[in-house]
Length: 358
Image (tube, rainbow, N blue to C red; front, side, top):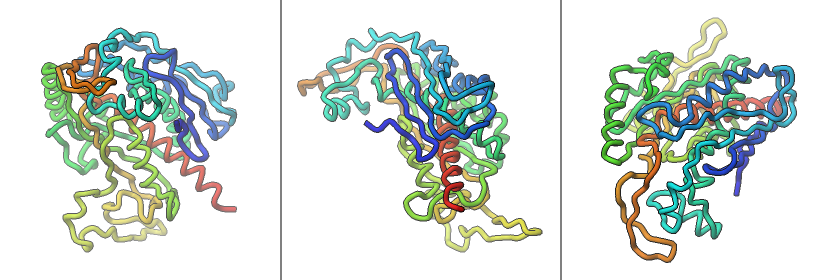
């Protein structure tokens, strides 16, 4: 089982949803970075369960403990070990499914691949495992901050309620002003009502998260098999429930002609930039200095609080109905996860760029 992310900046994660703890070991993190523990905890708080009436009721403090790699408030350049202990597991909620395969979950594929599965919340396939990513992502953000690079994600669509695709039309600082994490307050209210309605029906709903990276220098990414957009896509598609990724104009761009899509270069006093940014800040797989923006699609959560048809371990047809505490929509809690994976990718590729020149 591959549990390692990255090339130079790496995260090796461990843990299960209902195990003792979720954590990781980070290698390749630069020395001398000021480590703001309050900021790291605040990033975990954005991901934690029990935030509002439209998220799971699981009540976890998600307090992170660091064991190495930090001394007197700065990174030492050595491995950074950390863990977040699970304290509010309700493993008994899953006793009724221990011999059943939940529709659209990893139950069947894990069982066939390994011959065993942790039925308690999905074990290793649980979204709770993303805790490790948020810790590593928060550290990556602290390093990127010193480079003037920022990463901002927001909920841009829930079901059929969507924002304009142009992120420049919104004040992204308003993203944290509501429980949906949407920078448009009116659309956020509509999204919240839709999620609450779906939750009351025992159902779930999906949507889209948009992410904007500002301040990225020219030159991150490799020309062939290490394209920056490929790395970002791989990072996003590794997140639980993600079904799609597009950067720049993405699929919308196929409606335009090349004369409408090309980003024309300009030079103002030695500063080269493009008049438009249909490319999404990446050309030839390498960052061009403009804003990098992309969209990540999340499917509706697979756990429904209503009866569904399924089969058991012996292949017999039966029914299943989940009980317990589950998210009706993963979008609000997934925003910091998208940011974390983007920040980890950017830091990793920045470090790679430093090794390709003498």
